[in-house]
Length: 114
Length: 115
Image 1: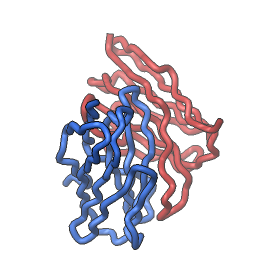
Image 2 (image 1 turned 60 degrees about the horizontal axis):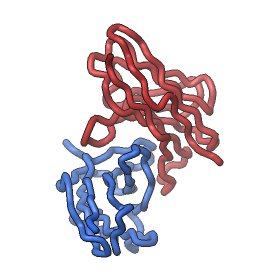
Image 3 (image 1 turned 180 degrees about the horizontal axis):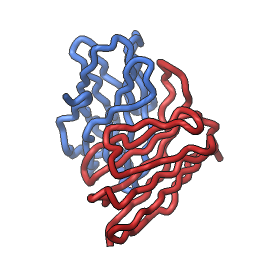
């Protein structure tokens, strides 16, 4: 079974608007961590934001925030005030328990329109 | 600057040939990883290593081999047994801290194609 599901293959967003990228996960471990990465067309993976399963508050990093709904097992990424440079593929990933490995979703391609 | 260096950026393989992708890090990380990415898809784990001279298979290890003789280096060999090697290969490293919020850091990748 898929551990990370990203159901939106591609999205378009107007510059300066906000966009929400969906991520649902599946784990029976009470301790886990969720990561979001950005992959521009050049290929490098850029870490954006982290949410731990025991964190009381939703994570925020600049224009990135996480809408973490533990009971629904979702960790949606919100990008506010979109910029042309935000056009990229975005991946949600999970680390379970004390493991070091990450499981990645299939990704969502975001295209920001001027 | 600390980081992960992957080389070469582009690599071409002939039929029946083994090729080796280089990955070097100067972040003093104990753990290193190799991922494969096919067009429009997510990353799949090939091999990972948590300590020198030790490594474990990931989800798609068949047709690949690795070594970890130094902490800084984790080369990946794509053998002739890998029948569909065309992909983008990413190397990553991380600290060894359980339940940590520290992310994996990635190199810029190597694009491998068959001639």
